[in-house]
Image 1 (cartoon, rainbow, N blue to C red):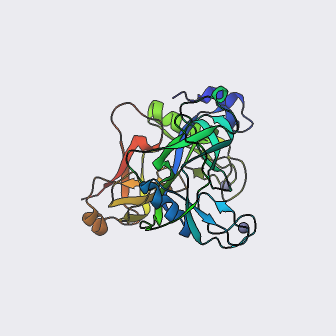
Image 2: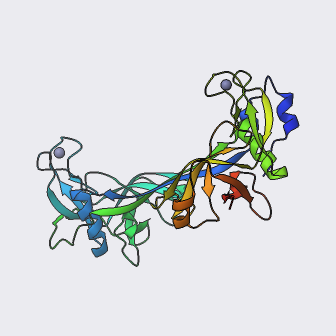
Image 3: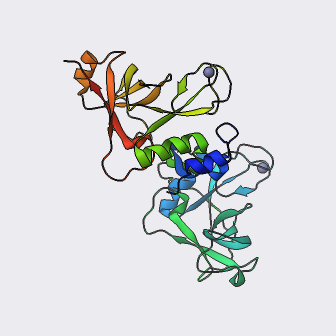
Length: 323
Ligand SMILES: [Zn+2]
Ligand SMILES: [Zn+2]
């Protein structure tokens, strides 16, 4: 990764310089796996796809047939409890091209609403509004809307308005696994940028000194947390320090990078005034419960090989016992 240099930082400096947009970023990702509750009507719609039936619900008030089946009519707000089977072919009401291919609004025969789905084997130039299309089914049903692979123009049957009552419904698909994913770029900014730069190039940990209280802040930051004044001077600190507090992590959670149990600690490096959070290793968890205390000395164990330029270049801090 392209890193900032100390020189480029100081050229911009009023104090220590602040132009985060010009500093490198690393790729970050937030992932949230969860289960989506489908609801009454959609749970049947999804289940019936395995039987190659497309289920809608009929509004008792305005008589519209809603596809996919909905719990309530969007037009008049009435509960639409009657489930019906509509044709698996229909006409294109509209279409567009996206990065993922052509999407169409499909008015299935017997339906009063449009179903959004993929249009297969066709570009925009091949399509026109009103064109007949038919569902193409997946070989194996997964209980998702992708049990219909998409809709294609070939072999689409002529229109038939028949709407059948739903008989012998399958077990509903009550939950669907979902994964929310958010990819983003996290800018280091000038302070973390230089910290990581120094770690990568010289295994040197740097903090910044507050001009008022003279505390050295690690990780470095633009303002002193206590005095609210701008920090003004880069300072080397040691890769040794003392534990101020620690916790043994037994719980597993999403996004965890270490396998529990492991030890998280707040460490004050020699020369620094603030706590850095890192892991403590080189000691068994049972022994750690006995022997680690606030005040226990630790030293950094650096990663072998090519540095990545983050605090991950320190594998962990190991305790240094007098005995
Ligand atoms: Zn209605
Ligand atoms: Zn201060």
